[in-house]
Length: 538
Image: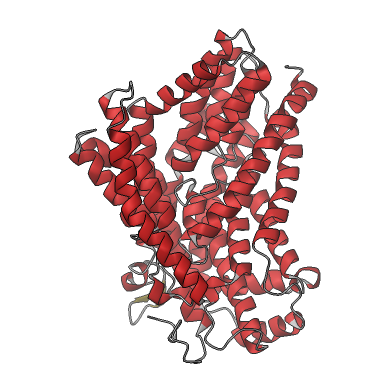
């Protein structure tokens, strides 16, 4: 282990910086500092999952359901994998790999078809972003950013204000930059802020000398604010997240109603604002920071900033690589604002400046920009890159595989149409509620993009068959597709913050389900009213 005997009870002083650099997606019980009650709970949870997952899979596989064989087996395996993800009897990335293996062995799809989606651009976004984050942490750039935010007097003294301010920055950025890119670029700063708070708690003897900085409640709140804040901000503009573009295109094609950039923002702004308030309340209540006000933080930060000294060559190189990457991530959004999302220029630029390709090219600069040319030393070595959280990359890759299979086998469509027929939906309100719930449920185990691509085409014919204008329920499904806050595989941003090692999956589920419910209520209640006010469509 890279930290000083965490969990040993020896009283040795924890190396906070090493704890954050050495954090992992999954830690065994022996690698955590747990109270006796927590240890009993964790052992029980993991033991139950070890036996429950195969039982659930086998029982569901033998149920006499009127489903095609591939859909039936896929559903059985996916249920077992979800049990593994929630109970963690094996490392979460391994749970996903077991599921993918089971799908191929059971003959649901051939191996090449199953593994193909793992080459998704999102996987390469993770790789590039994690390498950039490794450089920012290694050379202290993240710490400088954190100190800048904390040095603002109105922010620095209150842990709640730190979390809220950071969430606002995240939400505003993600309105124009992809949610994944926003979280990837801000993650090092979040870790820097958390390490400063952890060190201050340590120096003021508010925690035990051998405390585990990865288990602070303030860390859970900060990291989940980063992930969920990006999802909230992504709703604000049509280009904020891919589901928005997918849903808008399908709605315009089906109804002939065009949703302009400004119209979208006018509809989304009240929902986003209220969702952000709800988010702050949920996270701060469920993950109450260890201390509400950190006295002396301003003086502490000023002292730390002075000790950082002038910006080094390595920091400058890291900032160059980071700046170029962010600029290229933002550029398609600028083109969308000026030329429109329908223009050939936007299509060409967004295709060529793919977010995953930009991420790996930006990360590659770290191995090209020298810190000492004579010694042929560069900003980052491969040994540094090899330490990134490959577990999170595997985890989200398997999540993408399951999302693709849900769509390709037709299981998602079967679930949607069967539920709609069984429930006998006949009103705009009922179909809207169904659309929101279906989009959220599917987005919990697949990407938001896959959720929108699957659910919106289901909802439109359901509404038409009921003699209802599909505009409201389809747009509600589009918004709800950006939800899915419970699991690391629900969204790329969830996976990124889970990879920090700061957010236990039980905390993500507890906070995520609360926010899912509040967000669903806001969409169902507010969106029809806003659509009527802005577009006159009811």
